[in-house]
Image (cartoon, rainbow, N blue to C red; front, top):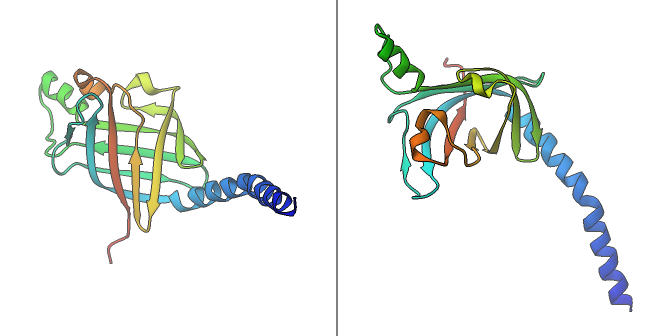
Length: 170
């Protein structure tokens, strides 16, 4: 009976402390994500085949910024973009860009942006959720499976994006 009571006491302690741990983890994530992050790599994974490809070339560029006030800005652009002169070239530029901004909040290992401005007007007024993990100066981002307008022909895909904390060059 004493062992059972001890086991119950341990279980209750763990169960009651879990929300505090989750809140602490959420607070830590919220503090750690604040800052400027520079794109390191960007690949897309196709759900049906497992295929991975760099949708914006081998050397895309981009940044994401998280402010302490709860605002985020996210922009990725493809490798080798050049100024457009024709309507077709201008349309092609749109397919080599992802950009949005709005208020964000942290929920455990996800940041959720309430999109206010976007390269794709269909995103305005939506919430975009991104799972993330910070290890040292690396921020790894994983989107949910979805159909992206830039490569809708692939079906459901997810983005695997890696950033590094931006450091002003001396």
